[in-house]
Amino acid sequence: MLSSLHGIGIIRLDIENPSESEIVIPAHERLNLDWSSINRIYEINSDFKKYINEFKDFCQTGKTKESDWD
Image 1 (cartoon, rainbow, N blue to C red):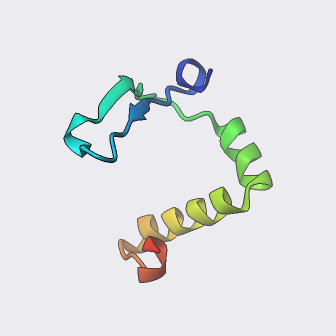
Image 2: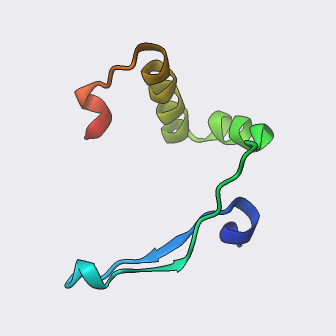
């Protein structure tokens, strides 16, 4: 399960009443990144690759592009 392996949490969203949404499984912060998984996903997933490249640009410049938020 992704939550135990990667620390990914699960949120149950209540569209009718957002204040009733709840965290089903909390996410866990990891102090060390799994670079082999990051590199693998980067090579096979174009959306992730775009995200990482935009994040790198943000870290280098501190600026966001409007196209990053569409």
